[in-house]
Length: 134
Image (cartoon, rainbow, N blue to C red; front, side, top):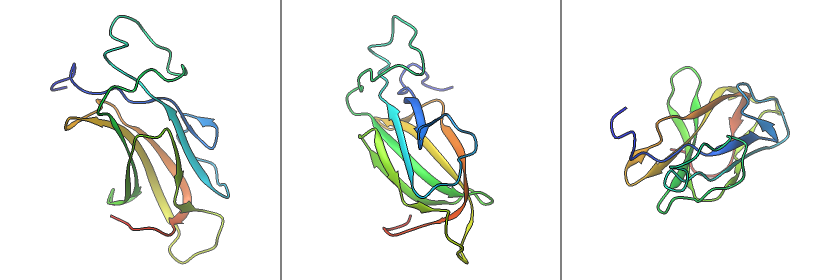
């Protein structure tokens, strides 16, 4: 709760493969996370529906996307973005020795402050592909 008025807002209209705010993400050939900007300064005097289009973004805001191990919460992949469309390096449609359960997390960061809330969803059993890991 500390510095609540200073913290950036969590993005709105969060979708994974066009599914709105999923708790459990369905198995698919690929995974795309999309969302809309939020700006606490522009929204200070009004309520905004979570499904509204972009507002902002507030200058200096970044979005952090993480994929973590379901059991240990160890972050295996992390990506800082200003874009609102992110292809996730995750595969679940292959029978692979390293397939396991994972958690997807999205939150905002500005000036060292994280958004008060984080979006989390469980990915289907699968594994990370390509790129560098945390």
